[in-house]
Length: 107
Figure (cartoon, rainbow, N blue to C red):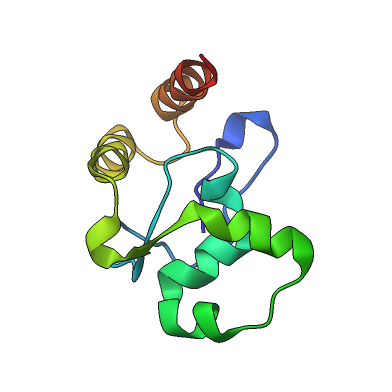
């Protein structure tokens, strides 16, 4: 479950499961689309089950975001989680950081 900035009209769900890189079962490519795809969430929660599930054609494309088991969590993803947690989830600092990372990733 991603944390979202509250200043732009979004709220984090009250009964959300927060997936930290240290608890994820799968590594996901550090990319804005990959980080917010339901298949990626499923793989982080239960990689074996995600791999066994039947997929539609669009899902096959998105499955390329799943890097493998937990040992493949990118170091940048771990560092980003630490920074966002340090700033406070949904704060203006976190929003600025996420926007900057999104712009840097687009280059």
